[in-house]
Length: 300
View 1 (spheres, rainbow, N blue to C red):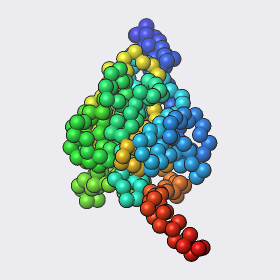
View 2: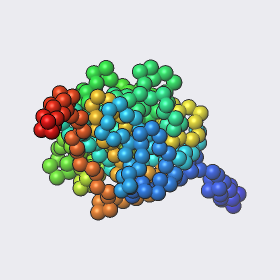
View 3: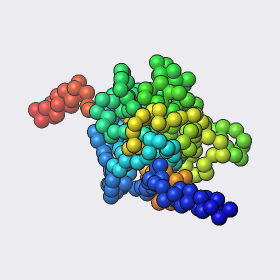
């Protein structure tokens, strides 16, 4: 009996001292003023208010923002994570808004191959060699990507054709039904992405609504198959505009490889999002000629 107990104790001890298959990573950006551990490229920048702007409301832009430190995990064990962020898509007044924001998981922060417009700065027309998991908040209907409609949320693996897609909405526990959300309203939207090693769950909700009890999307995912032989992954965001333009903003972001470690959201401390503005228009040449003629006539 004593030998059996000793054997159990040795196994338990070895289990306790064995390295974890995933090193815990947790961080929160209540605003982005310090830009600590933040990688930005192309049109992405931090505004003086601390708001992270992925694109301004100008045409054909791409912006990326990543957490510089990679998530480390063992290829022999499962990886899990949870993230909660607040974003806003503010269309330019008088124009069609677009295109959208994507949360990215990738072995690289280099997205120089990615294209703007419907590719959201995450993919390109060929998608050859792409290794990326994306959760997209897309505002336009792209039938070539098998979108069911505009204003939708999708899960993409290595290409822009979603493996899971649903109209942008959230489950209201009070009304016991899904309530739609207009991603182009310019209002802040909460997004949750939870991965437990086998299943990816995505939820969205208006700013003052708690996390829905039912996810909007739930799809089986195996990160080891998407990223074979990878022990480091980066997390971040991309956004893009085309002829359809919007300002794309990340207001607040919390991430953790331990679901219980996510920082709670304090709405009172959020940075305000800029309002929609009309495009700056130059005076037509004919009007300038007429004004010049009037001025010279008065001076004559």
